[in-house]
Amino acid sequence: MRCQKFAVVLAISLVIAFNLPGLAQVAEQPVAIFHAFNQNYNDVRKFVCQLADRGYSHIQIAPAQKSNSSQEWWARYQPVDYGIIEGKGSQEDLRQLIAQAHKCKIKVIADVVFNHMANLGGGDDLEDLSKFPGLTQDDFHSAPGHPGKKPCDINYSDGNRNSELNCWLGGLPDLRYTANVKKIQKAHLKKLLKLGIDGFRFDAAKHMPTNIVKEYVDYINRESQGKTWNYLEVITDSDTRADDYKWIAAVTDFILYNSMKVAFTSSGDLRSLRVPIAVDDSRSVTFGRNHDTIREINSSAINPYDDPSDSYLATAYVLARESGTPLILNWDNADAPYIKTGVKFRQIMRQCLKAGGNVKENVLAAVDRSTVLLMERGNEGFFVVNKAAGKFDIPMLDLTLTNIEGCYRELRNNFTVAVERRHNGQKFVTRWGTQNRGGMEVQGRDALYFIREPWQQCQTNS
Image (tube, rainbow, N blue to C red):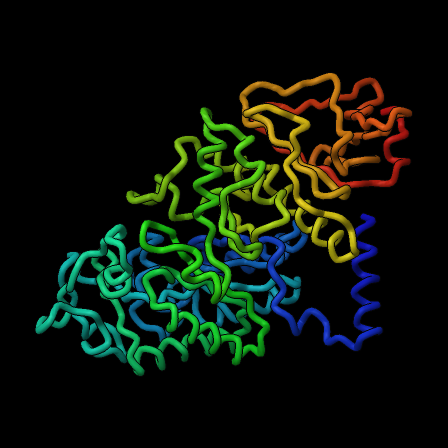
C-alpha cells in the first residue's frame, strides 16, 4: 500500500532530522477503539493481536475495580472497592492482557467509574455506606441528618447542573470529592498506569464537577508524562453541553449519534450528513451505537435504533470520516463485515495523512439521493453507503467537481474503479469492477471503501 510505505519513510526521516523522541512520547489520537464490552480479560488477550491486524490501535476494557457481584453487565459500573481488581479478571490477568496488547502495538484504555458507588441494598433510596472499604459516610452525598439516604433526584432540564452533580444517579450512592475519595481514586489510577494502561474513559463524567475531572486528567498526564489518551462520557441534555467538558479531554459525541439516528433510519435523509450536526471537536469519540443505546440490554436505552442494522451502517459512516475517534462495539465488529473493512480503511487513511496525502473528508453532491451517501477522502480514497433495501445502480457518474481521480480498489470485494478525465476536462467513472461498465453499483444495505492504487491496477480486462 503506497501510503503505508511513505508514512514509514516520513516517520524515520522526522526522527533523524529533528531527533524527535518518536510516537511513544506523544498521546496520539486513536485510529479506532475496539470496545471489549463486558469481556473477560483472558478472553480479550487471546484475540487482541487479531485486532491489530485489522487496523485497530486501541482496545477499551471493562472497569477493573471490584464491583457489584451481579453477573449483569451494568454491575461492572457499580464500584465496591477501588483497591481490588476483580470481576473480569485478576490483577495478573490484566497485566498479561496489557503485555500481550503491547506486543502487538495495541494500546489499552481502562474504564473508570468515579461518580458513584454500588447499589447493594436493592432499593433506590437507602444504602449501607459501611460496605465500601476505605470510605466513610462523609464521602457521600446524603439527605441531611440521614447518612446513606438518597438526598434528591436528578432533573436534567431545570436550567442548572446542581442536581446532576449532587444527587444520586438512580439508586447509586453519589460520591463527594473529599480528600479521602480523591486519594483512593488516584491510587486506582496509579495502579492501572503501573500495569501499563495507556488511557482512560471516565464514566458518567457529566455528573462530576469539571474541576475534579480536570484534576484527575492532569494527575494522569503527570504520572504518564503525557503518554495517555483520555476521554469523557458526556451524554448531552438540556443542562449539560459538550462544551462544558471538551476543554478537559475528548468527549463522547451523542450529538452526532442523534444526527445519524435520524439520517440512517428508513424515513431519514443521508443528505443531512453533508454538514453533520456534531460536537465541534475532531477528537470526539464517535459511534454508530454503544452499550447505552441498545434496547436489548438496557431498559433505559438512550435513543435506540429500532433496526440494529441501521446502526451498523452508521458505524460504517463513522469509520469513513476524517474527524472523530471511532468506538466500535465488539458485537458490531463481528456482525457486519463492512465494519472490519472500515477499520482497515481508516488505518490506511491515517497512514496517507502521515505521508502528506490529501485525506480531507467531504460528502459529495454528485450522488443526490436520500438513501445513498458518497464521501471522498481527498484524492486518497472514497466511501459509499446505500441504506436502501434495493441495489443502487446508475450507468454514469460525473465526478468533475471532486478530488477523486485515478484508480481505486474496494478493500472488501477487491474490485477496481477508474475515474478518468475526458478531453473536455470532465471526470467520469469509466470502470466499475470491469471495463464493461462505468457509473456506480452498490448492493442494498451495504457500505464500500476504496483506496487509491497505481493506474496499472485498472488496466486489466477482469
